[in-house]
Amino acid sequence: MKVLVLGAGRMGYGVVYDLLKNSSVDSITIADLLIQKAEKVAGDFKVVKAERIDVSDYGETVRLMQKFDVAISCVDYWHNVQLSEAAIEAKTNFCDLGGNILVVEKQLALNDKAKQAGINIVPDCGLAPGMVSILAAHGAKRFDKVESIFIRVGGLPQNPKPPLDYQLTFSVEGLINEYVEPAMIIRDGKILKVDSMTEIESLSFNGFPPLEAFHTSGGASTLPRTFFGKVRNLDYKTIRYKGHCEKFKTMIELGLCSSETIEVGGKKFVPREIFTELLRRRLPADEPDVVLVRVDFVGEKPKKHFRYSIIDRFDPVSGLSAMMRMTAFPASIIAQMIARGDTSEKGAIPQEILIDSEKFIAELDRRGIKLRVEEV
Image (cartoon, rainbow, N blue to C red; front, side):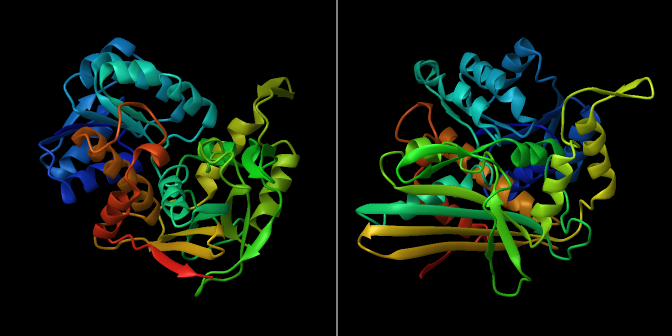
């Protein structure tokens, strides 16, 4: 199996690590616009090859993809439609870390073309969106009829610092998108859009200070459509330390996340661009972190309440953050499954439909990501 990893950032590094440590692939190539970044990752692992690639160059991308059985995109989500089209032309299986439902819808519209090419296109294969979608599908099978699925996920610093008690564990642009774009949910059997950073609830995990969860966009990905007509309620909320939502929402309401150009002192500025840079400069990014996952299932037949939970922490042995493990490892697992043909059909298909959840959870367990199951 020959694997191409696009993007040599944190998540690209995590994918390469997993491919080397937890698979039997024949070769791995990591490619980035900045060849120095790719070479640094390749140098850390010795047997990995580095390439330069501009993923916005369609022809160049097709030519590179043709050499591989599967490509994993760890670049910004707005490239993923064109990358999916390139994968179809190259006849190379493809998955990505996703993060934007409008992009995902365009990718899934390529289903017939992907099927004709004999490949799989699987968007949104990180943590959330991603792994939690497969957990949702797995837990729902416990019931003849499931009534509600509630997903709560958060990547947090182990040692929170004011003012936001948060550290950057992935793209700043992605974080802001989650906070300002609407969230899609199922409520009382209907698909609805609700404002992000609303309906704050308190929750607790053993050993952690008070936490809160609130609506954010994207985390549920295709689940509302997959489960429409099958459940009465489904929603996704992001976990943060208590008080984070109110502080960040104030900054949004002041216009700091606005993409509208404003003029100050005869010069033009975009508030969001300045705010994004300030977050990059002021928030910690590489301190020990923890990822919390909770998925609640309320069933009608049988009438029970199950809970799935995961607590994963920074690994000092590998140097991988919890967010890298919980985002990159699922993408690596799915990439290997689709490249091996461990899927029921070809095409562009949501992972909760395509991926064997039992095999997927077994692979998580093999990597030390432990799923706890309890009846509430």
